[in-house]
Structures are given as structure tokens and as C-alpha cells.
Amino acid sequence: MQDQDTPIRWTVRLTSPPDAVYGMLATDAGRARFWAESAVEVAGCIRFRFPNGATWVGRILEKEPERRFAVEYYGDSRTSFLLAPLTSGGTDLTVMDEGVPPEDWCEVLAGWVSVLLALKAAVDYGVDLRNHDPAATWDQGYADN
Image (cartoon, rainbow, N blue to C red; front, side, top):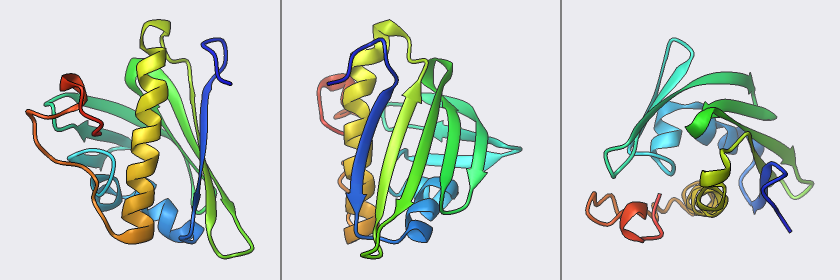
């Protein structure tokens, strides 16, 4: 059970190998396949643009290929992705979001589930679960990134 006194933490099991998963997190094209409409890296920062028109610029904090990727995210939280290779050739991917403002905690907790499942669909099955419709976003109650 998670509570607001601890970092948000979710793990998803992927059939894809760590190099493919890391590519989704650490490249502009990868992030655009599951996370945001665009997420371009410029001078060590990612410029996110979401379907609802929201934007965010977050510094990249860590890049360790096939092992770890971390970025500043909304509310100046620290979001880390930890990749653990599986003997099957797949990856356990854990996201930890630390420093989420209390007023945003519940929404962010649910939001990471949406992002992780969109990542799983994209990397394991080549499917984009998002609707890309600015009139049907999280803000309007849609389960969409």
C-alpha cells in the first residue's frame, strides 16, 4: 500500500529487453511513442508537450544505459526509472517519483499507472494506447496520458 508519506513506486514486467526499454525512456522518439505528444531533449532538458496543451521542461538527472534514467518532473519531483534485466530476456521497470506535492499525489499515483501501461503496450506490442485528442484527455476524465 502506498501513502503520501512515501515516494510513489510502481513496477511493470516487460517482455522487451533492457536496451529496448531504455530507448523508450532516453530518446525523443521513444518518449513520443508512449509518454507525451513530444518530449524533445535540448541541452540536458526534456521539453514535454502533452495532448491537453500542457508543457513541462525537466532536467535530465541521470542517464545510465539499460539501468537507470531520471528526470525532474511536475512539481519539481524527481522521477527515476530503474531497469532490472530478467533471465527470460525481459525487464522489470520500476518508476519512483519522489517529492510529489501532497495536493497532486493521488493524481500522480494513478497517472504513473497509465504511463507504464502505455509504455508496456508500445515497447512489448508496438501499440499506442493514447487517443491523441486534446478534447479527451486526463483533464476531462479520460484514462489517457
